Length: 75
Image (cartoon, rainbow, N blue to C red; front, side):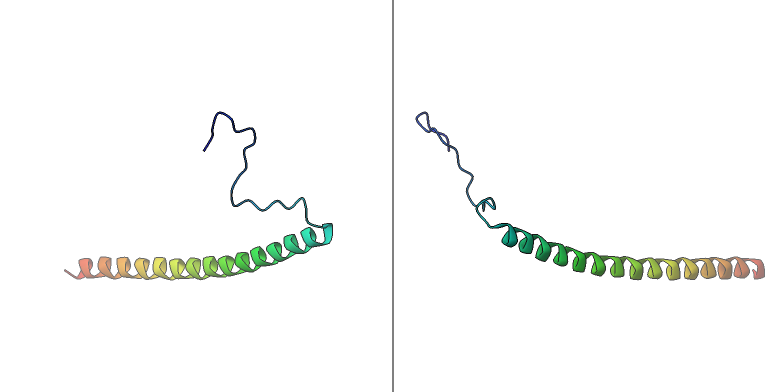
């Protein structure tokens, strides 16, 4: 909270990376990048699985619609 006599504002919970050595910054970014790439692979795989399910459902829907039309022709 701000007070009238407060001259400095600090964000709580923020880790300044400016004090870290360059190698540590690079290692942290590399680890983060590796994690994000792993997450991306999982999400792409899940998306492909969902697309395959959707394709199969669309095919089933078309088959059922064709069967319904055939039954209507019989009646």
